Image (cartoon, rainbow, N blue to C red; front, side, top):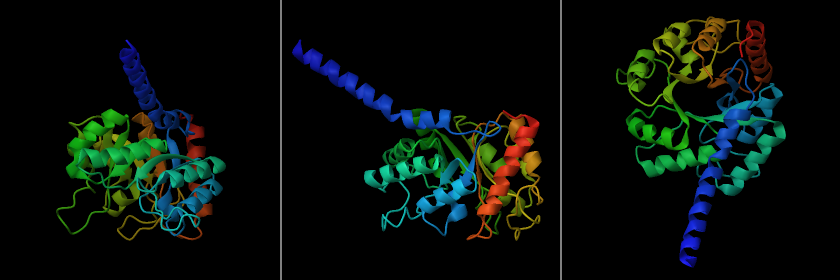
Length: 293
């Protein structure tokens, strides 16, 4: 009888720990600030010349309440050699979590990150991400899609396949939204596209057309507005370029999109905070004017 009671307590404790481990990401999804139904934020790559701690501060200064992290960014001057990712350790993770809370910023996504086909390695990544409240991983690891099917079910998270620009290498197909749709269409619906609108423009594709090709399978976005429709285009404040940001927002709303939209501003690297702020203000103003919820 005592053994039975002991086993019951152990089982209950295990169930409690599993339940608790799922709370951060679920709470993040429910409590992170939304704009027009979307998790609007900044991709930390915008501030790649700074530490992750500084990126959080700059994102907050631009008016952002959400951020998407990327792997390998130095954490901060108080943590020499520590980089953002599953290997950063508990003490560094806890310190970073406090820094996020101090500036009122939530981590909603992480990428572009490699996802291993090996389930044990993949589970380490998903577990770490969920511990920070991250609900979306962005990747280009096509060969691991079957493992992702298992992970998104186990962790109730989403995975977006990111696109870089078209190149002269015919083996690189991620730039093509139809390729990504064919890749994901028979997999769990939590797996879809991380729509990088700037890279579509650099590939000669109109972003609104690309979104429609994906038939609602967009789980996240790196939102950009470029100055010209060319591989050499650079970022400009939303509404002043050729990407048709208004049309992009309309199409995402039409599709019932509820994922992360990360402003990734790859220009004026050291002085971009005012321009990032303009982009945030543009999205908020447009969604408010349209009464997008």
